[in-house]
Length: 405
Image (cartoon, rainbow, N blue to C red; front, top):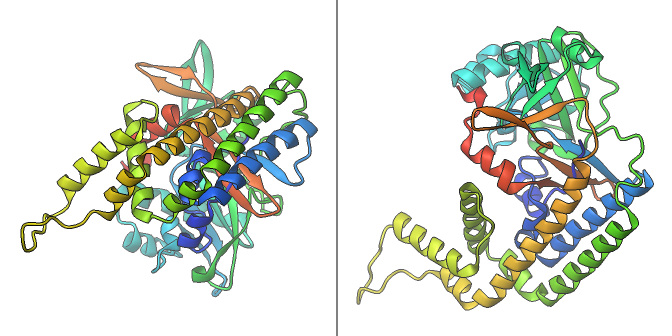
């Protein structure tokens, strides 16, 4: 399945151009202000057009795989030696592993330690000429044979979603032979680990050395032809809703930019959103945010009393209170953007894949779409994720990572 990738400019600044975090499309309203909001909408519109015309020269769609952990690997630009690591490769003091001893020192936690040693052993054979980032999908210990809905599958569950494939299919047989599997989604270049920058999302991996011990792929969703995915009436409705979002966004441009420049406000809003997602509810309103933020502040901060027993000023709360009506309008816009995103995701989810995807509900696994999608603007090399926050983000918040066990 395919995904939309739009790498948030603010995240790129903070991470030095590393893919350490992809943002939700609707959150661009707060993250980067009006320009980021428009970039997100343009990418969404561009992907719909590219799917209709089967032209991916500007906008590409890739699957957001629910793999874990994220791994970074390849040839060290300075020494030429092969290394593996997690996103901690991008730390101010990078944790780069050339040997098992490095892994023991940098990652003593048993679960992750074991995964990294497998990665160091097997991914070396790919002879990666640059540096790639990807999501670990399976290893021999995580492959299982299961019966789901009366059918026998080869399954693996790296994170929240359980993937299932016919063990007798060519894909299933390749996976059965492999010791480890990964999906690559980002390529980097630079003169050193410290100066790495994103070269491209969803890279071409055809030059990697094939090996029966390693199953690898990129995140491209192989769609032979997607025209007709939206009918004429649906395209008209999409465009009408898109134009309304733009008009509303233009009317809220000033407050949108003001919020994006207030780091404290953005943090409180996004923390509040995550609390809503965890509860399985839709986004509330600014008054609920103020109650939430005030309670958190009173709980977490150490009260500092000054002369006259005046409390320490709370500029973030004061900003939110002062602009509560306009911020509430941004919340409504946020929900509308999420609604249009969901419409596109629902259509993309109808496209078939060799992998079955299941989510555990109660004591059984229920068929579900992929976790989400990533839209890539190849002209600007930007990307953003499209994920069902209530369904998958909540599950990710509450599920323990198997590799941490």
